[in-house]
Length: 173
Image (cartoon, rainbow, N blue to C red; front, side, top):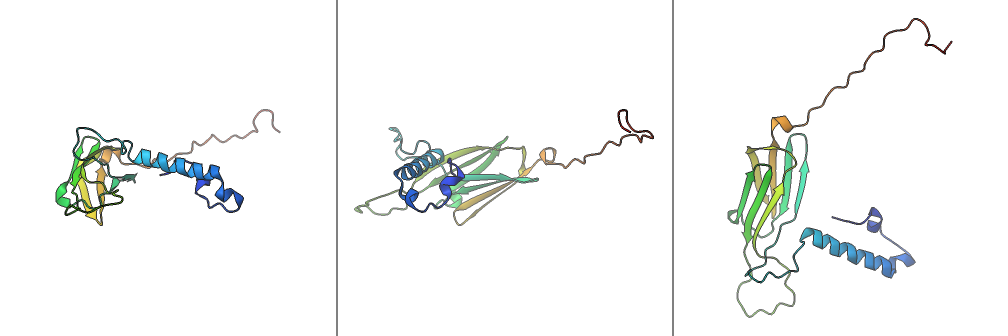
């Protein structure tokens, strides 16, 4: 997800490639992107034993369904709960700590562990009985069928025919 204009994604060459302003812009874009993805990731909540995390999601739709994909690498299917409630999809679960043993001295540890609960507002009404969820290679794909009343329907446009005129309109001729 990028909050900056498309120009920042183009490869720069020449003197402007090493510009301090370009580097600053790239760093600001990276920080904003991280904040949008996990707004409170740097905040340590004093009453929580483990830091919660939120999986990244992509939401798309077509004429008949809404498709939600969530990055859940390391989450086992038995530790995952998918619920549809009204116009909301709720993803909840737990990613268990895979670090075994103590005494390891990590220089950097960025993997997130712990419980998560993500409520996703759906853009259309869906039929809760027609929901499919599949976990494949750490990506959860949820397909939610739209209710028939909310499915897109193409409307034919009619052309109004003007009556035939035998004489030219006033001012012509």
